[in-house]
Image (cartoon, rainbow, N blue to C red; front, side, top):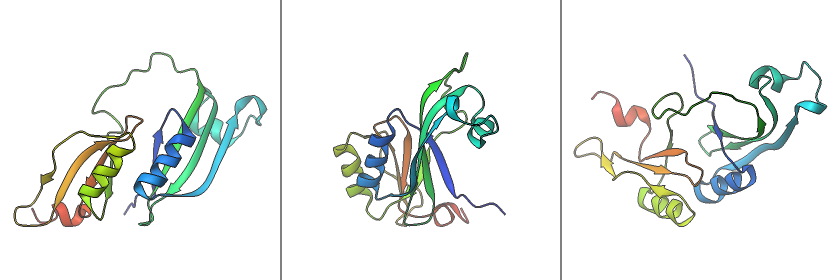
Length: 156
């Protein structure tokens, strides 16, 4: 059985993104930021193996939620990726976060440069099961949920 430990997000400005996730959504810095520059690393460095030779310079940081699931932010500063195209609804699509107060979290995200992408939806009639799609200031889609996935969709 697998368990999610963290999700990796690419952002254009690591410092700004880390500050935003900590300030707006209550994440805290677990470790980092770390810097990688292929020009100064050994040829068998782990990042070269994981990211591939196209990534020559990057920074990353690990943020943690109170629930124990993290977000790893990546700022790819130098990358030679040819022919890559972004396709909506392919690969990474969104991160779902359980929040204590949906309305307050929506307002806080909007106040700090994010935006609301959808209406608030009740997923189960007569239950306090709500969700909404938001967007952080860096273009990543965040689903805010009032309950965990098991409660929201189990036995439907």
